[in-house]
Image (cartoon, rainbow, N blue to C red; front, side):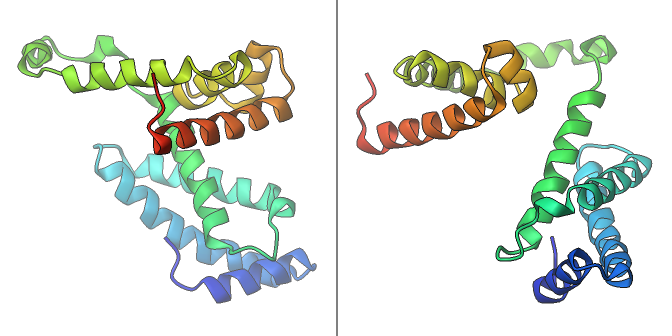
Length: 185
C-alpha cells in the first residue's frame, strides 16, 4: 500500500515527538495512499467512490487518534495497513446489502453451484475447533468466524478483552500446530 516506508515512518516519529507540520504532512501523504487503496478495493465490488472518501476520513481519524499505539521500533506501513483494512472490513460489515435486495432473477444461481467443498471445510473446521478448550473455541468463534469485535466477544463470552485476545491467539496457535502435525481426529 505504501511506497516510501522510511519517509512515512520518519514523519510519524517526528509527529509523535510534537512536530505538528510533520504530522500534517504525514496525514496528507497517507490520504493519497488510502484513497487509492479504498477506491481499488471498493471498485472491485461495485461500491461508490463516495464510500472510499468516507473510509479515507475514518482511517485518517483512527490513525490520528491511535497514533500513541504505534511502536517506532516497528515498521510503519503494516500498522497503517492494518488500520485501513479493519476500517474497510468494518464498513462493509455495516453496509452490506440485505438479502431482500437480491433480485428474484438471481434465484437460479442458487442451484447453479454445488458447494460440497465448502461444506466439507466447515465440517473439518468444526472438528478441529472441538479439540480446543471451551474458552479458546468460543473466543475464536466470536472473533474470527462471527466477526465480533474483541469487546463484543468479551461481553458474549463473559471474559475480559485481554482473555479473549489471549484465547484467540493461543487457540489459533494450537490449531496451526494440530494441522501441521496432522493430528486432527
